[in-house]
Length: 256
Image (cartoon, rainbow, N blue to C red; front, side, top):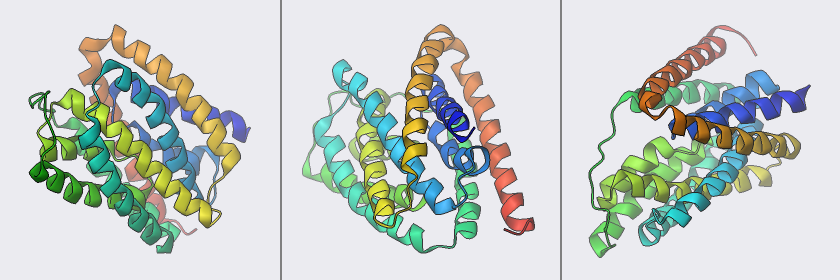
């Protein structure tokens, strides 16, 4: 039963990512905790980080082929973020699991709000990295990587605007370039948690398989209902708010 729940949960995360883009991976941790039945919040975070990284690298391939990845900017941001993710994930392992769930719920609310804000589509599609751009990317990447590592999330909702702010690139290039950082941060966080034996490898593999399948279905659905994607984003944000409130109530008023 746990295997079935893991593949269905992974499929739901992959579907949401394919349908509406960034923000879907934020549901991975609560799904692992409350649906799949992973008992330890730290194990859920480590397992989620691995699954998110795998799905990000799969999606990166299609953007790479489409030529939307600005590799010099992407690599600079990711390298700085890897350092931040290593620091953040180390700190995350030190925090009590119940308190970590409470903080995670607050981050979910922030993600929901960020998803409701319209994204600007401007920017320079032909951006070239310069020393000034590199310095901004390093600073922002370090901070975003730390947040991503601490909570074991992909962080795409932070990475995309972070890269746009640091490099001034277009949103399409920022989305493509962000996937490299999402994958890199996830691998760093997962490796750190693996050193402490805080990953359920079987669940992770099944969750990833479900995510790949769900992503394919979600992407196809997005092409068919392109005009309604904004509405779907609002619906999905409502789901995130509901799950966050559930986590806040559960961690605040019910004993472990």
